[in-house]
Length: 78
Image 1: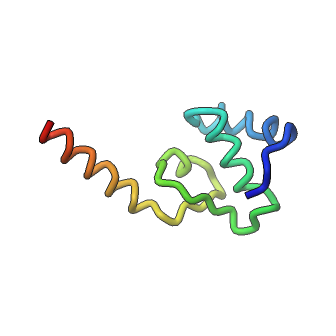
Image 2 (image 1 turned 180 degrees about the vertical axis):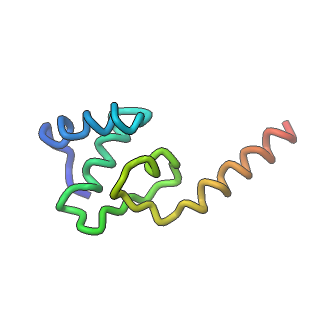
């Protein structure tokens, strides 16, 4: 992964507001994945919030459903 620079952090600010991301760290991670340094614009995450960003690919969307299903199972047994 490309290191975060001041320029990348500033470029991430519009993503933070426009895509209603959870934190500046989410926005920086997305911005780096959308940069020319990552030609396929792929982000590996189980966080569904990245689905809001046009042009970003998240290949493991099915993991989100699995994670929440497991959490629901644990919640029912507690």
